[in-house]
Length: 414
Ligand code: ATP
Ligand code: MG
Image (tube, rainbow, N blue to C red; front, top):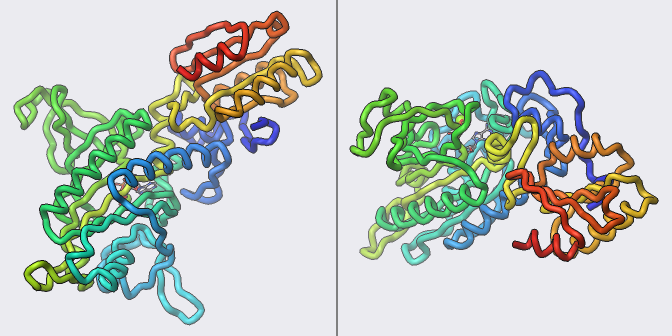
């Protein structure tokens, strides 16, 4: 990809409204552009990262037997009246009416729609279990949209719903999804804790949150310094240094932001919405459900919040917008530029390469490269005519000089 064709409108000044470093980098580097409070355009760099996060999520969910589909954003009021949430959800629900004065909302989540779907088709235990997910734009009229993509009013979420004939089967799936989530967060190179949580607006019996530890987090979590014990302070408010309730280690506090949430819903929706099936004993029973969310756009910013150095981004390999950044220091027409171009062409057959072909001074190119944060950087400068290419790995600052591109290619491969 030629950088002249990449639309990443960078800013010189750090925008005042951006408190978090990740937010500053996203605005400065031309990743996102605000349209209204809590409403953003994902420019090409951000959108590439989002697609990579989505692909990781898809891979891990497909692996455990989940199937992707897509439900409508527009949801009729009637369904929300049936579940009791047309009133309960309050002002966060974005409401609208059509030309015939029929009321709708823009989906903040999809329990109602998915429950109405399965009640029409799943009538027997023979059709269970079932696990359906979608990746879609959600709408919530947040009281205080904040920190850019962290708390938007329009944001991308992955929501998975599972359906079961028995509680035991829900437990099995809950744990499968939990493990898949761990894989997803690990692949995004995130430092996180799984905490017991209050179920909030969505309700249900048991739920856990995947909290990403970072200073701009709006929640406080208590956790043990020696075990997996962790909880939201809403549920368990222990002071720092207290013995952990599981008997292992002592309590610490940390700020965190919720990036994923898994719930055992039970029959909270199937009961009032009459989604029944016939079990093995020929009895009518409400379908037992689980639901599981991941904030894809929030994750983008959370990953950056854990992967910057000063004002530079350093994206984890699996979600980086490109794999290799090639930066020629001399202008088009020079021998070293031509060399860089042919190197880019060759590496592009195998990797996602960003080639800085812009007519800019090296200082400008390096500044922008630091905002784009691609871990593998190849600088093609004056030494190139003697056959020397400089490789820099951002993650640890490692620098190596290579004398030909095959060497670089095989090095990056490793
Ligand atoms: P929060 O406590 O942060 O408001 P929530 O409990 O309302 O989150 P869920 O209803 O569980 O969130 O939604 C699933 C996931 O969607 C969350 O784990 C989070 O990653 C993401 N999410 C929720 N609200 C927003 C938002 N306003 N902007 C971006 N992502 C969000
Ligand atoms: Mg919320």
